[in-house]
Image 1 (cartoon, one colour):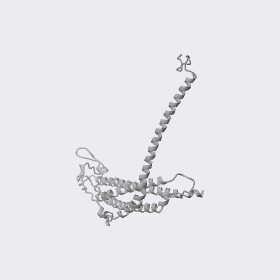
Image 2 (cartoon, helix red, strand yellow):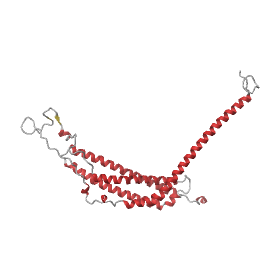
Image 3 (tube, one colour):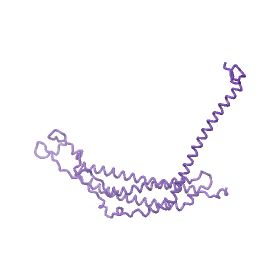
Amino acid sequence: MTPCTCGRSSGGPCSLCNIRAKKVQLFSSFRHLLLAMSSLLKVDRELKTRVETFREQISSRAPGCLVASFFPQKLLEFLKEPILNVTDLKEIHSEIKFRVPEPIIFTNSHDGVDTNTKKRKLEDGVTDVSWQEGTKMLVMPEGMLKCNTKLVDLIERVKPEIRTLIEKCNTVKTWVQLLIPRIEDRDNFGVSIQEETVAELRTVESEAASYLDQISRYYITRAKLVSKIVKYPHVEDYRRTISEIDEKKYISLKIIVSELRNQYVILHDMILKNIEKIKKPRNSNSEALY
């Protein structure tokens, strides 16, 4: 057997050496634990610093610049541009420049036109089913069918305003949420005002996002109708439907702009009326009441 390192026993490590070895092992484990805790505390301090920095940035932007100054400024910008004050909706119509193809008359071997035969054979033996599926067009003679440029310009003007409202609502909502104190069973009236404000901001944010969805659905609906005109060029109703959809979209865009203005008004009025409770939901002397 290996003699003890202290020389007291030749039959292996003695009890004193075993105790010393366990102490060294425990000290090493404790040292590793302290190092791990130190690194965790360092990471925790860095995260807290980042959170506090973010909180300060939100607090410096939201109440002063957005609610007090930016929101009223937006009220003066809306509904003043000439494109939003069109009286005759025919001014926003867009002509569909697509010629109606000349009709093709097929005859059979007998005199006159065969109106009873559903499928006719062409000279090369190919079955003609155009009467069932509409006019087949591989290349547009006039080139690409353009969108309604007046509505596209208006949409491109309105979309940044919608995105701006969403971003500003998100900033103010985060600011109010960071001001909500910890949950306690006392004096929660101010907290309820904060929660109501957050709910209103979330509603406005959701409604503004739905406006973007309406714009994308307009393009899809109009594209389907234009493809119907290409397929059935002799049907005038499809062309009139395009004009009706353009007029409807113009009215919808004007309503969206009015709603954006109204939402700025409501948020500005609601937040400023309750700004004291939003910033300080609980009174400093409330503890004396309990």
